[in-house]
Length: 193
Picture 1 (cartoon, rainbow, N blue to C red):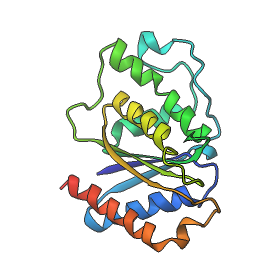
Picture 2: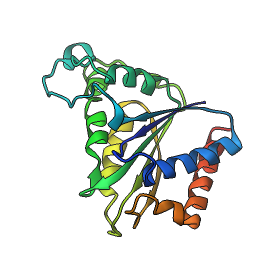
Picture 3: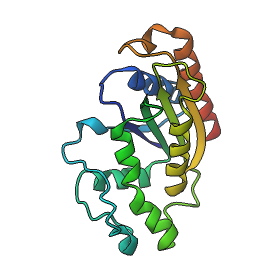
Picture 4: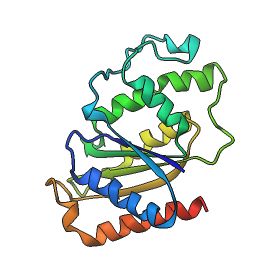
C-alpha cells in the first residue's frame, strides 16, 4: 500500500503534520504501508498554474519544475492525504498551487479522454486544521479536495478535521482528538483489507 501525504502547511511540525502523523500511526497498526510525505513549502522549484492552456493539447503541464515528480507520486499512490491548515476558509496557498497544477490531469482526463489507474481501489482524504470554530470553516477545503480527487480518479474517502487549534503544538495537547485521529487511520486500513 503506497500512501502519499501532501503537506500544505508552511509550518513544520505544526498541527496539520501532527494530525496526519497520528492518522498514519493508526493505519500502520492495522496494515503494512509505505509513506511518502511531500512538504510543499520546502520545494525549491514550485510555481502556480499559468492558465496557458498548454496541457489541453498534451495532458502535460508546460512548466518543468518540482511538480513533475509530484504528478508521478500521485499516479502511484493508493491513498492520498491532502493535509492543510485553513486560511480564510480555504486551503493554504501551497496546497492550492498543488491542486491547481493538476489542471494538466484534468485536461488529460476530460479533454483527451486518458485515465490513470481508474480500475484500482484508490482513496483520498482531507485532513485539515483550523484556528476558529465556525460551522462552515472546512466547507471550501472539502469541495476543493473532492474536485481534486475526482480529477485524479481517486475515490473521496472522507475528512478528518479539527477546529480551535491555532498555536503550533495545540493539537498535541488534545489527547481525545489524537485518539479519534488514530482511530480514523485504523478505519481507513479496514477499508483496504
